[in-house]
Image (cartoon, rainbow, N blue to C red):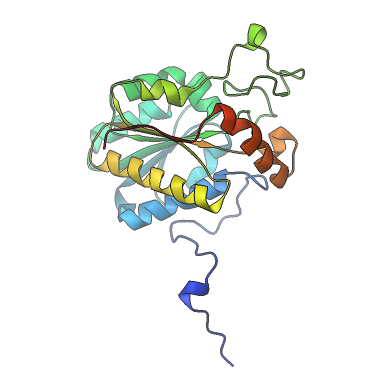
Length: 252
C-alpha cells in the first residue's frame, strides 16, 4: 500500500534555502533553530534574490554554508559596518548581520552602536549565550554575575570584570533604531515569537524604516558544560531574570 503523508502530518519541513550540509553546531545549540527561522522568513517574504547576510567571526562564521543566499564575511566585530555599506549600495535589498555576543557586544561594540545610531536600514540578529562558545568558553561581555567561565573560574565579579552588558537596552535608547526586541527559541511558543520578530526586522530593512536589533537569548551546552536539556533549564532559570524577553522598542 502506498504510504501517503498529508501536509498536516509533516512534523518538520526543511526550508528550501537550507542547504543539505551537516551543521557544525553542538547538540542543543540555538544557532540551528535561528538559521531555520531566517531561511523560512526570507522564503515567505519572497526576497531570496535580494537578501544579503553578513557573518563575522564566531560560531556563526559558517552561516553561508547553510542558508543559500548571498553572504559577505566580515572581520571580527565589523559586520554592521559592512552591512551599512551594502545597504547603501543596494537600498532595495534585505541586508542583515548574524552575530554572537562576543563579536557584537565586545570587539564590535562601537560598530554596532554607531550603525544603529545612524539609523542604517539593516537588521541585526544578535545571538546571546553569555559566553565565548567557539574559542573555549571564555567570559563574554554578557556573562552573568557569578557565572563561571574559563577566564573567570570563580565566577564573574563586578569589581574585577564589570557588569553584564545589556546591549539591547542601549540600542533601544538610540534614535536611529525603529525596532528592538529580545526573544528566545527554547520552546515552540518562543520560536514562533522569535520568527515574528525576525520577520518584522527584515521588513524594516526592506522598507528602509531604520535599524532593527533582534536579540536571541540562547544556550551554549558545550560552553556551559551542560546537556541540552540542562542548558535550556538553566537559561530559563537564570538568563531570563537578567535579559528580559519582549519588545523594548517598536516604532513600526
